[in-house]
Length: 201
Image (cartoon, rainbow, N blue to C red; front, side):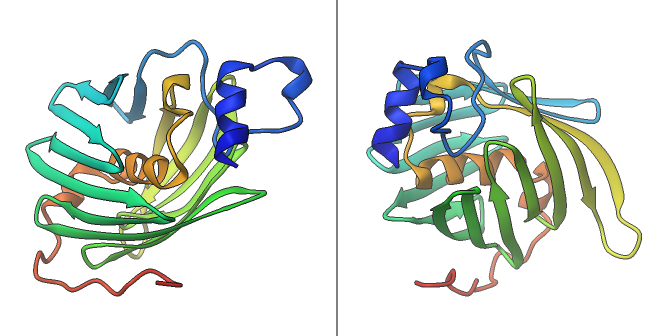
């Protein structure tokens, strides 16, 4: 699948439209952008780096490390899995590709991750919130519902720049997990919790 995606990144023509990449990338957007209510996150890819306000991350092989919103990050993304830490929290994630896109299953701290991210939609659970986003005009748009009982819904827009489309499935999953998790979730979970391994590990 990665060879097919890499080809689409460089030869994105109508003749190749039937072979869709695992996610919807924007050819015009220079940065990964997440808008949640009145809050905006931007991460600009430049070679192996991801830079933005409060974001200083870089790839070395399959390892993403650096600083993200005052939290240290070190994540190993390879062989269909993402493991490591975001601040004090353990991230353990299994990643599988299918006709629907990418399936992410695992946990961040004590909160589970069960998300499907594809070219048409992103749906599922991440960081204690449920996402229901649809791809339209080069970006994903929809709602994020957080909280127990009567969850609070917030409008979300996500744009993925074309510069990310050559990353492996595991690397894309790592970036999505970090970018879509509500920023307060990195601080409110039990850092001593030992997360179970993702399915199939």
